Structures are given as structure tokens and as C-alpha cells.
Length: 554
Image (tube, rainbow, N blue to C red; front, side, top):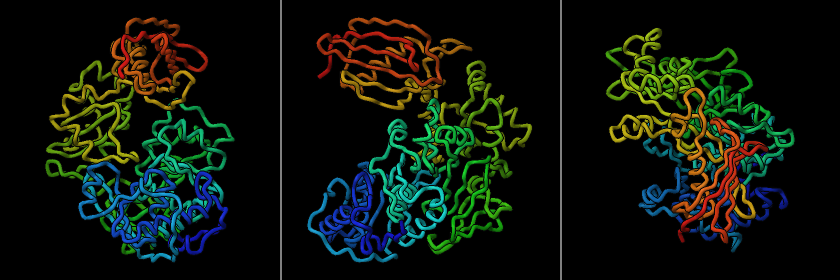
């Protein structure tokens, strides 16, 4: 399929029967854009808030062809939209309709601006303006690399929204420009995402999703995608290996920012490969070690980032950390990424984040071994132990003074870590929440309807709060927790509103252990006013029982 720049896509056109999304042909897509553009004529500023991918593409092009300024808000939360509509901007999403009175779709000006928002590392929204021509150039540069990996008719699926540059480009614009069909719906659960994949398809995802693959079996050859994309934050090496095992293909990471768009890529078929610039992108290093990139899709054709890099012999580069993450402690320069990396080398640490508040602080996710030591020593003495380990490679200024121990570092939508979220763990109001930060329920991996109820695939994490005391050295999920979860998920997915149990019947056939994927079947018998449940691991029943309902809330 020939690539057509977005500015000329609807003026030049594709064959009427060419697929666009979920059975939608190009003829219908063009009619939907033309009809909505006619209805939007006169709109000066539009906020694209359509959650569905297809209607997001229709809304974007309809606003552009209607001559409106387009803003892609970071989300559709009421507070966000209230702030952005204060100057008269109109949300466009739910009001989009099929067809209607059309208008002539002439070529668009490549200089047409689009506004995005990025929170960066601080959490404060920042407005970024890019042009349609920049997005076109980015999509064409993307195709020059990814087109060799994904076939011309590969269907594009996504677990990320199109409310940011990465999602918009790779989920919608790259498929539109190259003629590949895309899935309208964003997959929120791995169950639906994996079920939708077929051989040769494309999956646009992120570290926020790829670090949650534990317990998922490798896909058969008939369902393995040709390309798995990730962006937003570096993918940890263990997650990269696990993803390659599940999908049958190494993850391809995309490097960039809201300001620059995609500028480099790397395929995770080796440990810590260098980033290779996309075609048309020139990467270099400033005298103070920061990354400098030049490209037609970069504002001003050149951008200097806060990423510290070293140039690789293969023409690529490696990221060493952030220039804005060098702290001055007691008059000495301390690299926060270096402190984090040294903490992660400890067998007691699974992940870590360092930041400078009034003192050097660290947030640590203990490993299994570390969690046992934490439980044995307590938080204060465990922090002292980590300080002693660090002192072998860090001067006193580089040893954290304040610690927080959590089950998982707070991440944004794509897995990008924000300083504001990490800093919030040290606020006085958060102190009482640290002890309850551990999860109290399993992760829902899949939901399937039954004729008389629902079936859920649940991953039981190893850091559940209910495991305390059950039992040191051999954790077992207590029966009372299993009953609580059955009632909780029945209320959530069957709408039962169980307020009290009149009678319980439970049989435990095998112990249920953490770090396991189990299936919970819930069945409701209204006439008997009874909920039955069964936990299974594979074909083996772990526990089963029933709950008599005293009263069902309306």
C-alpha cells in the first residue's frame, strides 16, 4: 500500500473498499469525515475527546477540514475539560455521527497546528504545539523502519489511548498514512488484547502493560504479532524477556517526547542495545552531554533534551540519565539515576526511585528476599541496611536519608515515572498510607460472561496484605480472603450488592499460593438466593463454596 501524507489523504483517496477500521471501508470513512466536518464548520477550537479509535480519527480530520484549531487534551476528566473549554473550545467526541451532508475535502496545509499536553517528570501540564506536517513526517519515518517488520495489511491493536503523541501516531496516524487497518477499541485487559491478535498483527503498548504479563502463557504461532511496540519509559530487562517469551517476538521500543515525536528505536533482542535514530533524524551530543536531535518533524528542526547520552560506535546512542536529575547534596553532585541503578543491583531490591526533596530520598520496591528482611528488621533498620550496601560505592552525600518501601512504584499511563507521584509518598498525609500501600485483592486479567454468572482470571501477587502470618517462608492465601474476593467480584460484576452472608459453605481442596494465575467462577441462583464460587488453577479445583444472601441491595 502506498503511503499518503495525512494532509492529502482524503483529497487523494484510496480505493473505496480499502479497510480502515473494524469493517469500515475508506468510502465510509471519507463520508463520515465529510459529514462531521460540515457540521463542525464555524467551530474555532475543538477538543478531541472521542475514546473510540475510529471516531477519534474521524473527529481529528473533521476538525482539521472544518478549519478548527485542534487540541488533544491529556484526558477527558471533567476538571481537565473545564479548564480547556474556558476560552470557548468545544469538546468533540460523543456528538460525532455517521455520514450526513458532506463538504469538499481539499488538501490540508502542512503548517496546520495541533496542540498536545505533556506532564514531563514534574506532573505539571505543559502545552506543546506541533504541526500536521511534523506528524506526517514522523509517520513516514516510522514506516521506513517498521514497514520492514509489519506487513502492509497488518492490523494494528493498542492498549494505549490516542490522547498523546505516541498513541495518536502509532495507533491512528501511522495506520491511516500507510493504509493499515486498525482496531477501534483500546484493549484494557490482556485477555481481550491477546484474543484479538493474529499472526502478523501489530500491538502498540507500553511498559505499564508489559510489566504485567506474569502468569500469561506464550501465544501459539497463529496468534503471534509481527511487531510489539513500547514507549513512554525504558522497559526493564526482565519485562523485555518475559514479553518476548509471551509474544514470540522481541519488543521494539520507541524513543521520543511530546516535543519531538518519535526520534529513535531499538529492538530488544539483546541486553541494553543502543537507540538507533529514525531515518531523517540526526542525533548528537552537546558539550555538557545532553542529547541533540535534528529532524524535519522536530520543532525548529533541532531540539536539545535533558537526556544525558553517550554516542555508540554503531551510530546510535545510549541514555545515561537526565541532566535535570543531578542533585547537589552537601556541595557535591549526586546522580539520581546512578543511585537508583546501584540500589537495583542489590538482591534485596526489585526497583527503586531516588529524588531530592529537603534531603536525598529513595523509594524502594523490595525483592522477595528484601520483603522478608523488611518484615524481619522493620523499615528503619532495613533502610540502614541498604545505606550500608550503598556506602561501598557512594560517598556519604549519595546515601539516602529518607526511605519509603512500597509494592510498586507509581507510574503514569504509559509507565512513565513522574517526580510529583514519587514525592507524594513523602508527604505527611501519605505517611499513614504507606502501611496500606500493599494490594488487598488480585489483579483481574480477564472477564468472561457465563450463562448464570461470570468467570474471572485473577493473578494473585506475592505482596498481598492478607499473606501476613500465612505463613512465614511458605505464604498461603487465607480462606477468608478468598470468600471476601468472591463477594467483592460478585457485587462488582453481577450487581448483587451483597450486604451480609446468611450462611457459608466452603471446601478447600488445595492450598492457594501467591504469584499464581487462578480462575474464579461465580454463579448466581436468584431463586435460591445463593451465590456459588469456585477457584481453579488449570483444571484443578482449589476451593469452592456458596454464600447465602441475607439481603440484596436494589
